[in-house]
Image (tube, rainbow over all chains, first blue to last red; front, side):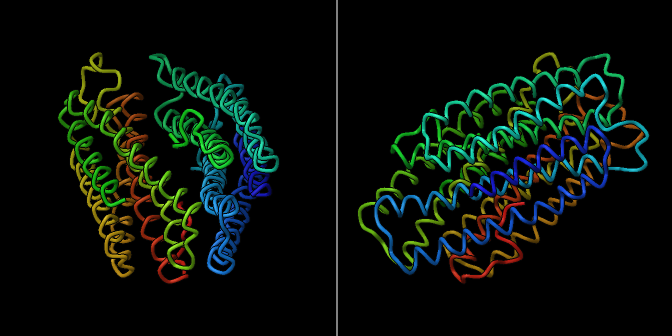
Length: 207
Length: 207
């Protein structure tokens, strides 16, 4: 699971760079790299089911295995969303004459990439350390991502948006991918908090 | 879980109607109705953890409980996505003078609502009957949703799109909500297939 977090974080960071630099081969690398995340999910799922069927774990061990299957599903989605960002980098390439991200939104998109990559790394640390306190830092980062997402949308939807419908649609979907990626990272922390304490932090439900 | 499927299906159907008719109070009902889906998820999760901690089930029972937690997470997301559709119905209301869905896209959106509502009902039947064969029908419906989603996007992104950036962005997100809703319904069927047979149908991973 820690390796899945690392791959998802590296994926979203690389996809963001590929998007900003219009680097098609870097985008392709992220897209094929997601297969590794998917393979890890299947391996964890298979091992979990074997563990559940064979050793009949009880109590805490059991909760860890059961919630581990939910956590890997969240991490797998984070990998998917990194892939979606990468797909936008190659979308309609090479017909697109303009950059995927207009210069005036470069900083917002770069920040979204940095925050979400950091959240994936942080989710990995929460998994590694079972550190419930560290989960709060993820909620704070998530608030920052939500603010950047709203900022992106407000620019795209401003009456004097000059870059056309196609770019507006791409950027709206892009913003949603980052926002969902961040939500899944928060879900990972919430599931771990729930398993460790039996209590929900705000809500364990992904939004 | 069957009740969650029913509520998610009713939600996406009602949200679609609210959107097409510009019915703000119907949209609000869907938004508040999603709380019921969330409450069911929490109840199932609590009961699952108690079951796992207390009775130490083994073998198939254990797999059912563990995968049940994953299925409820999928159903909870379906409820969220129905709520997102409903939110588009009230978004920027009442400033928006034009309908949320232009007349020429009414049929596509109506079909998306009907297919996804049917998929939620179908997922409930798969859960109720543990019917692996019925899971294939969900894959077929999902293909139909993907086709409608592509059709919607191709209209929105056509060079002569007359309805402006804001409506284009809303409809792109709307299409994505339906597509994700359908994917989650397919995931439910795949998890059940996996538990029942130990084999994956295509892939158990949500896309």
